[in-house]
Structure formats: C-alpha cells, structure tokens
Length: 370
Ligand SMILES: Cc1cc2nc3c(=O)[nH]c(=O)nc-3n(C[C@H](O)[C@H](O)[C@H](O)COP(=O)(O)O)c2cc1C
Image 1 (spheres, rainbow, N blue to C red):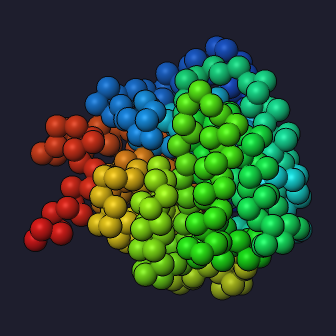
Image 2: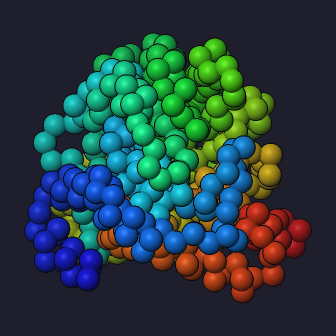
C-alpha cells in the first residue's frame, strides 16, 4: 500500500517537499488522541524480549530514528508513535541557519539510497531548547540530541559553538551526540582528527556536567564511514581515554561505491552525503572494527543502510547495542519499525542467545577467537 503510494505520489514530488508532507502528517496524527493510540497500537507493538538497557537508559527496544529526520524536535511523539524506540533529533547548531540553497535532497530509487546536502538547516539551539522545555511527552521514548557546528563559525571557534549548544540542550537530552561527520558543512569532518576531537569532546563533557547536575548525560560521537581504518581505531581509543559513552557509526558517505548502474548518473554525481543501501557494507565494517577495539566498554550504535530486521540483527551481532535508520524509512514507510521489531524478536527466538544483550557483538567475538 505504502509502496504503491510512494511510486504514484511521492516519486513525482520533489523529495524535500515529500518529506515535509509526510512529516506534517506524522505530526498531525500524533496530535489526535484516537488516531495516535490506534497508530501506535498497530505500528509500535512492544516485545518484552527486545527491551534494551543502553547508556544507562531503559528503552522499549534497540531500534531508533537516526538524526536528520526531525531536525527541530517537532515530531518526537509522532516518531515514537511509528515505533521508533529512541528518537535522535538534530543536527542542531548553536545559531539558526537555513542550510544549503536550492535542490538539496535526491532520491536514488533503484539503489534504495538518498543523496543529501541539506547543510544542517535548523532553527538553532535556543529555539529547539525552548520547544523541548515546553514538550509534554505523550509516548515514552528516549530522546537523543545531536549537535553540530554553525556553518559561519570558523573551525577555530568550533568548541565554543558546540559548548553553547550543549549548555542550552543537554538538560533536555537523554543522550547527547557530537556530530563531526556530516559532509555538508565545510571543514566539519576535520574535527574527527583526534587532536581536534579531544578538546572538543572534553569541553562538551564539561559543559554538560556543568549545566546538568542531577544526572550524567551520556555523550556520544558520530563518525563518518569515510574515515580510514586507522582513524576509526584512533577515535575508538580516544573514546576510551575520555570515558565517552558511545560511538555512532556511521553518517552518510561522500564515496559513490555500492551503487548499481540503474540510478541516473546525473543524480549519482550530485554533491552530498550518500545514505541507504550503498553505505551498508562500510557502516557494518566500521562497526565491526570499533567493537573489536572497544568491546563492551562503550555503547556502539549501528546506522547506515539498515533496511530490514536482518540488517538490524547483523548490526547487533557485529557489536551494536542500538541501531538506527533513516533512508529506508523513506522507502519502506510507516511499517518500517514494526517490521524490524517483529523480525528481531523472531531472530532472537531462533538464535542461541537468551537475551538481546547476549547477542551484541557475538559474531565479532567469534571471528576474533577463530
Ligand atoms: C536527508 C538526510 C539528512 C540527514 N541529516 C543528518 C543530520 O542532520 N545529522 C546527522 O548526524 N546525520 C544526518 N543524516 C545521516 C543519518 O542520520 C544516517 O547517519 C545516515 O543517513 C545513514 O543511515 P541510513 O542509511 O539509514 O539513512 C541525514 C541523512 C539524510 C538522508
């Protein structure tokens, strides 16, 4: 049904307009009590065996919405209604900004992929903090807040920019993510180098501790799939050194590998980050590498090309305690999270593992001892 609708309506619309339309429907449905109760009952069935404890938080399950879909925290309940066990809002920058001009989101339908160069269009940390402060939670969910650098702020002043966002947003976050991996803000990914990342993460940690005193806000970093293997290892070592809570692997890629030959070459050539099926192999590889290095000491979040329950299960076996998706949601529609939950519960039942936690990293551990 959704696939037919997608083929007949959404594919004829500009992708960003289609996003806004879908987003409006989700928000609307979440505002109508009868509708949202019905939608959640159908789309967000809970499985006891999928209950997850991660980052010191209790969640209904391991599967959440990746950053970028709800940049301004306008549809947290709507996304929870659709079955996402955690919702990562943002990327939010310290100052409001419009993002890149013109057409900036592209569908590669045959490749089940997207290219985007949105450029962190968002209302800024003050406005988002105000919205979160006034939010009355309808569905209990875990809220991640993903922060990034304001485009006009020079790289040398990046730390202060992230700190300003942290001071406004940390108190509203169940967990906080420092995004240094979007390809659409010039220079941002240079912050992944450990000599830049160390002072940045240290300052954000301090700002979070200074502004939120009653609890420790878990802090994660989100990395790009384009990092060389040695750099992935370096981030892992730094995360251990700094006592970081988690690493999210991965963001979109600037590579154009993994594409079939069916998407039009002019679309494939668009500048921006590629997501969806083509990024799956490298995201999984980065995750495996991280798990081999940090094991259970740091929570790993697997994201990139997760289209179905099998993909999510493979990520868990590779070492992810949490998994996220974005691009496949566009193609799969409102039953996306439900299918993942159902399939994960079935896979766990058929597996040798008694709990989901036991399955985390099992394949990577096996490979290490083989
Ligand atoms: C249109 C679009 C916008 C995105 N915006 C952000 C963002 O603002 N911050 C961020 O950390 N990741 C952003 N992402 C990356 C996703 O969170 C995710 O890491 C990536 O798309 C890989 O997952 P997927 O293959 O399931 O889409 C964006 C992705 C897309 C497709």
